[in-house]
Length: 64
Image (cartoon, rainbow, N blue to C red; front, side, top):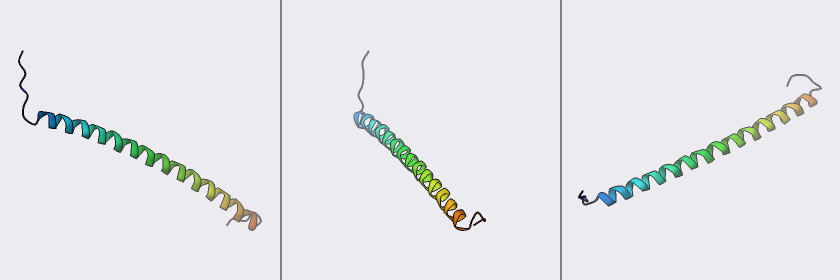
């Protein structure tokens, strides 16, 4: 069986691999951003709970 290599076929193949690598990099970056946002949300939830407790103590248990 004979094979014919078209001009530019290697470039197309190389571009395909580059696009696959770029997709993996973008997915990894999106995952890092999602993890960072989750940690930020947990930090802010904790901060708000602490603030709420401080305000309740300051108002002797009355709603803030």
